[in-house]
Image (tube, rainbow, N blue to C red; front, top):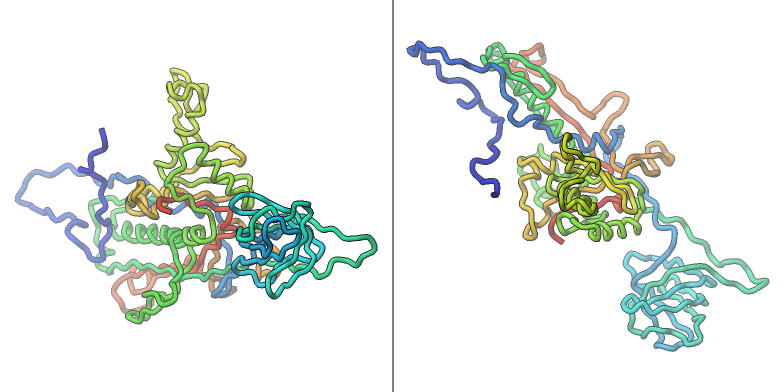
Length: 473
């Protein structure tokens, strides 16, 4: 029987900008001679309500003193072009090959190199030697090794890659040289703020409810709870902003807005945005079979081939992986040895897996952010859903990049946060109190205002090694 939609989980906000009757006890009927029996301590019905933890597990935080973070990532070592055409017809002994790949300003092919040329549609191929190159026009002449000449038609779309070179005795060396090419990426930090304010009178008001917070603090002053929950929300936003941030596109409402001079107008590149644009995307929701994972592994083979990877998943994805792995056991269908294969009648049956190896090591970890109904856990799923994220594969370890601040190569985690800081100003996590209450003596305002601020961005290095699992092509 399915879980009924009513009664369901509560999504009504737990915080308001103004005091309401729902925040305080209003039943002070002294004509009633019976004293109710009250529980002074709050019951924590939602457990730990914070969703932040992901970046703390996989990343690091490092200072930066610039408005722009730039880094260089290595390009491919070998050259391959996948959109070429031949001037010759089938059976020709020589041909002129034109490279039509986008963003190619000068082809990296030189006279004397040997090339492999194949038809993208049929797989028919030739091997040849380069006899002339026109770098400006993006063409090169090739003579085929095969006696039958060109195996594919002149209209075929071709792929070309270099596999070596051949020269005669007593000849000069290779003409020309190749320069290493890096890809340059950048990101810009954004300023994140929050504030909590309470009047001096309310600070002196005792309550009958003993409030408690996630860090264990307790007391009978209600503002302690509200201030701490503001702090918890802000800490969550420090992570979720790094996950969800997107840059303001040229001409967008954010980039052109003038209604409020206080709000930001540039955005930043969050993890989901970067992986969607520069990484790998599985568009079918959750892979549920080994063949599904084999296609993902095949893609990883073509990328950085990182040995160890962690998949952060929502609950449904986690169960799908468990079921997939359990199906590999001949006794799995009967439920007799599912999970731990030495289960017996006196122990709790373990129906879950923490990871598996198939070509690479994959470790599974639940991601609360994807399960929380007040965050991404409330988004639609299924074949008709578009864009709902169910998981993220993150490579473990670190990578080497050129750091402009240090002026040298440095090891960096694939995911890390850069925050603004200098010798006199640290904007990683700033908090300060203003007003005239609560120990503050900065103004004549009869209140305490707790301010929060951070300026940061996330750097997603080697996005080609990440995989985003979501619904929708």
